[in-house]
Image: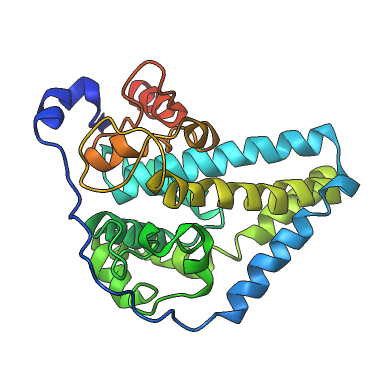
Length: 285
């Protein structure tokens, strides 16, 4: 396995920071129509997650924490983000399939959807119209509203093929794009057989809702607050509490300055558990 990290390429990275284009001063386009299926979907998951107090057990809470880490840190942060979206390190193809499948289980969309949108975000960071979850439209737009007011210019297969052609050519990734939602059925069934409804409530619904908001905070909060270590050409900041919630993704100014560097936390106090996992893979694979 190979990776790009401060240990491998810090000198080059420090001399050539990746600055995102400065957002143009333009008027935002009208908000797209509300997607009622999306509203119902997210409302149902949040509502079922609120049942957690009536199904509490320490084992169920442990399941939620474990799956939050597995699907979040390994599936989304390591897999969808640093491996697929930025290609900041490489693994054998079979392992990439495994990691991407874990990412699909996080219930944040298929790989092409997630990667294409994220690459669009980096190409036009904070542009009020071209960034799918632009913080220039406000906290709630970048945090959540962009998902229930989907822009057709971003939510379409043609855009996925354009921004993520390396994924679109894989039949398995195309299958995951179409079937990621159905993958929650075997997850839920397996949890029910192991621990009953408490495991389902915590392992599917509580886990999904907390992981969604953890991830969305990177789109919203870290583009509105935090300290800046680099001139990234945008408003991205390093936010310690967001980093703790997202296994290192909250060191967002570091990431926007050097998106192809696999390590997000660059100093000893910038804790980056996802990098620990990448470093472990580097030793094992």
